[in-house]
Length: 110
Length: 126
Image (cartoon, rainbow over the protein chains, first blue to last red):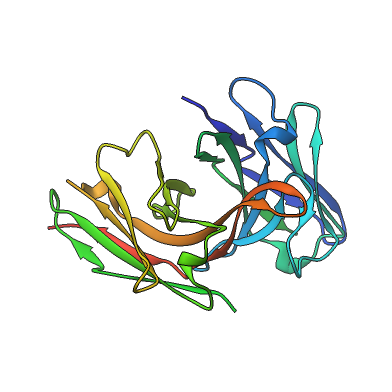
């Protein structure tokens, strides 16, 4: 069974830079998995941030960027702000209509 | 602006079926070009993709849930629905419906979920 891995938690100082990653329990994440990233605050629906590895969704600030770093997909937040404190989820398209979400990263800004 | 709204019972008894409907406004499901998906989130846990459907009826299911899940579409009502049979407490979750984008005519494959409903909490309890 495919498992998509994310750091359970991360912290960043206001104004700092943080990179969250999205990996596979077996194998490497490439652009062919079309990694996308979602931000979720408590009680709210997820908000789409990044798709197709590095394309920002409409209205998403350019301090959010996506990439492939080594064998993982990555979400980098540059100049973190207090309201970036959220849960972040990646999802990979596995092909044949199948999607697998990562377990999510709880980001603290302090 | 596209909007999705989940509806259905908020409380389901164990072993009974869970049924939810997603009403879509601001776009027509029958226009094609998009799949429509169900995703759930148990309390305090992460997101889990359940199933996706195209207006033509083409479906894809999470292999771990496939034996209990049926997704369907009603283009006349611009809605799609989820049925999960034989529920247990482990099926307690917020259920989201979402629009799934697979392809852009200019850029090609761009698989992701771009619009989400607000979510519907379904509790399984006697």
